Image 1 (cartoon, rainbow, N blue to C red):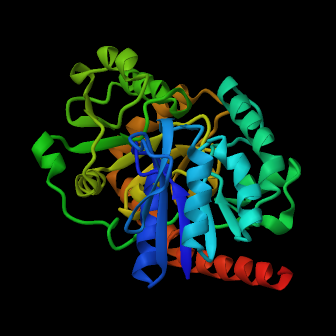
Image 2 (cartoon, one colour):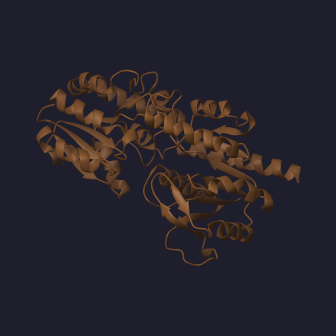
Image 3 (cartoon, rainbow, N blue to C red):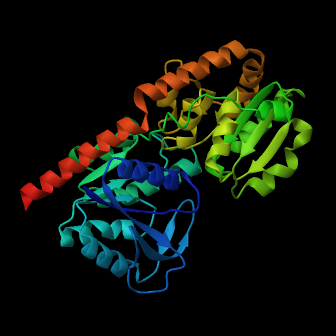
Amino acid sequence: MHIAWLGKKSPFCGNVTYGREVTNTLLERGHQVSFLHFNQETESSEAALVGSDVAIPCLLKSQVYTIPTFRSEKVLTDALRQLRPDVVHASLTLSPLDFRLPEICEALGLPLVATFHPPFDREVRTFTSSTQHLTYQLYAPFLARYDRVIVFSQLQRDVLIRLGVPASRMAVIPNGVDVDKYSPGPSRLKANLQVDRLFVYQGRIAPEKNLGSLLKAWKQAEMGPNCRLLIVGDGPLRPSLEPFYGPEYGIQWLGFEPNEQRRIEILRGADVFVLPSLVEGLSLSLLEAMSCGVACVATDAGADGEVLADQAGVIIQRNQRITAQLQALLPQLRDHPAWTRSLGYHARQRVLERYTLSRNISLLEALYAEVQSSRSLVA
């Protein structure tokens, strides 16, 4: 099958990782994949075909949204007309083109699948979650026109159905992890850092990730000289946080780590992974940590609480003070290594049961075949 994948290859974020992992696995299974990605360097008004890559011009692309140029729609339409894929799969990048895709693909007679990534919350609790809810309200009428919309959990599906997306067009296919690559293994990280217990946060340093609550809790808990908190990632809040939470509190800022093997080594060396988000979809960083056998702590944001339920991790309630909960919890995780080892074992088992990349790609292949067959019957 020939899949035209529309997404982005940079900057690094969950959407980029999702696109890379899924398309690489589809290629390994013998499918043809054309990757249509946004590129600020494209000057031509014609699609820049280089092998299986198609560059779509844009003015700006960030970790959160993309702004296309006025030529983008023509470039995209011409590329799809030339490629004639069996299915178009858009890993939605919060771009105005997301709203035009159903009409473009309908005119070309191409089945259209979307993966809808934005974080969500069942209740509007904060300004951040209310902003995300507006995103869902804005997108719902357009998602109703896609042949299928992939979401990561039943909770997310329920939100969109309440907003008017037909249940028949929804498919729940969670994020998946390559469990052979992200697996428990040796790491010299703690030895190199000369610490006994290692806690890790990995992700964007942005308001919705709520890193400030973790940093305050760590400082107040006085975790001691034999514990270290590693902050892996970058984002707009880093300059306002890093000066106040440094080595004197056992906190080390590594910044963005582009090397995947190095990120895996960090997870393998960690005792505890903490994700204090206010809103989430289904965190791929969380699943990667679980797959490496790390004890995980996360809020009940998005589907993260669903992932950790039934002893696969520790769930923080957002309707209570997150900082206070973490302040009480962190010393317990420090002082009970047998508990964290047990949590890590159950985390790995949960991923093996429900969140393997192999399983989820099989579900995706079945969905492609279904929409292709349905479009053929209509034609």
